[in-house]
Image 1 (cartoon, rainbow, N blue to C red):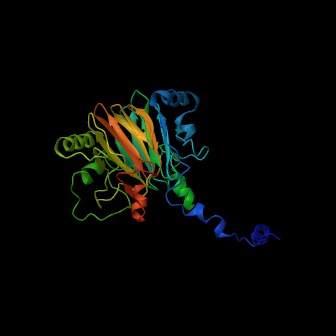
Image 2: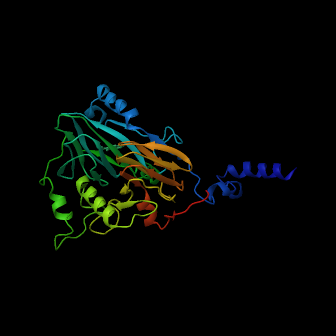
Image 3: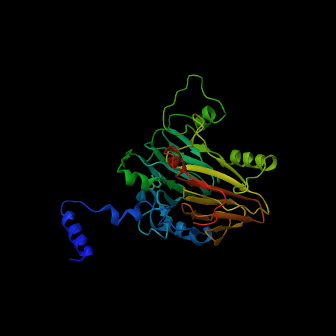
Length: 345
Ligand code: 1HN
């Protein structure tokens, strides 16, 4: 028998004992660099806003539980993910609606894109949301959302759903009533933990930041100050990371979030890192090149950059970009890499 046929016969035989040869698959398992199914993609807000609003005519927030259109990576259709490890969606909550209280082991972030004055409540405290606010819902915290304003609110959700799927660690519970009871006054967390101070006898209660709304006006002020006083990073302009004030680490364990300012007439050096990133444009128009494919973006557009894809930006006006990724996980595991002058893949 030719050697290849002998091997095939062997493979079929050992298959019956749930064995399979590593040498046939090894090169696909440990690749010289990341080989992702995730592709770059952009959702222009002007293209999808109408779809989000149309979903509001079809189903209520209560019936849907969460009325969200998932942003699906075109390289991984049907998998409810925007990158290999993260989920993203656009959530709509109309005036007078409540998205009922539940909790799950998945961690969530909200990035407010349109509307003012709707709230989310997290473990007994409400926060009113404004455009550009970064809000977190840590793992296993009760949360419900409501809109007492007179305008629809739309935000970008980011969750670690694929990670929890991978780990087989998903749990969910429903509170049973639309809203959980409110136990602290609005702003309590921010006043206790958001001022560069901690209560003297405070000890850590959770794995995530005790602040759950990082308001845009504060973030914008910090960017503005640094843009005027610091040397710009050749790849990032001015880039800040949302932190847990208890640890200096990322605000959440599984998802890292960032806000960056690209100055006017900026041409960044190309950059790549092992954390695939989801960007949401907050202010300004510009152009980015992702592995040599150009995209043009403006306010509220969302785009995704795969792991180890090279990205560079060009602006004619000042721009502000929010982004999130699994960098916190990769760093905790000692896996995260970056490359500041990539010349090949
Ligand atoms: C969820 O609970 C929210 O609380 C949003 O707003 C999106 C996607 C999948 C599972 C739970 C929310 C979600 C979600």
